[in-house]
Length: 83
Image (cartoon, rainbow, N blue to C red; front, side, top):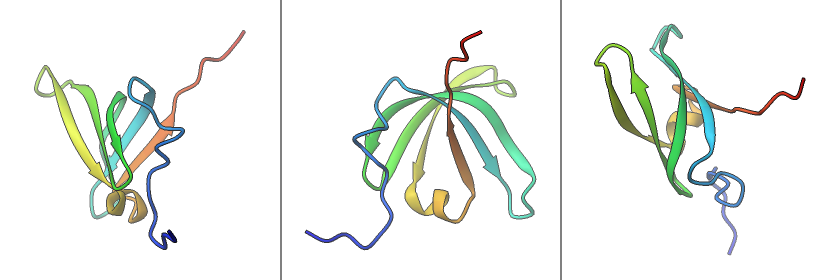
């Protein structure tokens, strides 16, 4: 099967993986910038959990692939830096 649309790499993005989440508004100002944990991954969407400082609670957020492509959201893998 040939797929001509962008998709999340479900082979490399796995549940329990740590990422840095950025969400930008229409003028590219940062609305969210926080560490998050991947909860579920599908080819066209990903669910992450993060602690929201404003609401003082844990939240889940579903991000579709379109939001990554149009750069509303940005997910950056977090790695352990060996000293």
